[in-house]
Picture 1 (cartoon, rainbow over the protein chains, first blue to last red):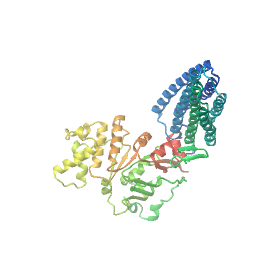
Picture 2: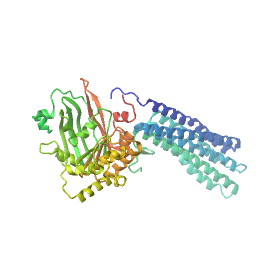
Picture 3: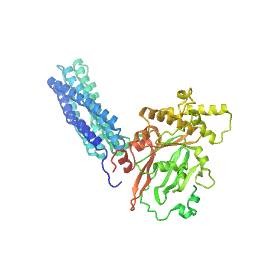
Picture 4: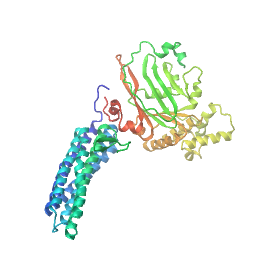
Length: 234
Length: 294
């Protein structure tokens, strides 16, 4: 058809409203990562409490989005790229909710580790992981908003140093020796490292969803780019 | 109506004169691994000098449900009606190209259209039971197709057809009641029983649920999924969700205006249903299924 107009205006307006609501969580998610890392690295218990409060707000938005999303699906039963966009939105909603939960997990470690001895080098690694993970969230969302496949494909390479630092945290934990207090502190920091690594993975997963939204084909990212989901990812 | 009877000359059959043929994009369509129950090759349909639908080449896989969707006037019902020569009943209708059933072009001169309609049954938009008993509605199809068995055999045939149409349990105690005494959904299932009674191979369904409520629609859809084990089903539907729910493959037809303002339908995309409704290959399909369509 040469003269294309949107005859489903109402649905597309509501879809945009829902999208705005989901995307409003990106700043909060980034800030929560930053706050959780600072709380656990500096042992700042007030900051840790504020992370938990912020997660409550994310959970509230998550439930609102879920309700609106269900209503839109029931009313309009979208298909084609609209269906893929709706699928992306619900995954993004879940992604933000889980990122919030991971930040709460990190923040809680600040309280567990209160008063224990610490290894500065491991704190620096956690801080570095936080600095790497926050741009991953931003990049994944920007790729979605712009519909930019090349930008989405950047995520595996961005995730690689996060995985490497997480693996290194195991070595650092083993290296703290037999001091029980230090070992307890390091083990908890390993959990914080794992939570940051998961946030990175969630950003990669969402970038894969964005690629599906753009191309209509399911594919799993590998570091070089994309491999077909049907084929061997190796 | 055969092609020869319509035109008398092969040249005219292939391309009626003075018809403006709009340029349409050519696309590759899905080819099926399953054996085809029917297929069309460059099938075009004219009503007089009006080219209603052009150059449809596609296969209908055996024991699958194929849905035909598209905007009003795209020719999907016209295509359906050509598959059992129902368009013969319209004097001005002409069909060019080929419609194969068991590798035989059903429009060849030696083909009996009545036999074609027995083997390729049809269910219409509005339930249209005859003004007869429930029993006779179903037995009628067998009788006009020369059934000469005993009454007991006919009873068996009626029960089997009603059972296949998931209606037997609801009507077995009132087979003598009028077909009109049934609800709309039951009437449509009665029509399906009537269609399957002569043991067809293909069932054509022209918007079979458009006059039914959602519960009756659900029952027909479930019935279709059951019936496809025995029959090949081709359904025209305006309801995209219905096509998405029940069909294995979906064909999207669109319509194009020529310079004279005539609207000609054509096949845009024919794919696996999941592919067509989640990631269509053609932008026209995407625009239609997402409601971005002038």
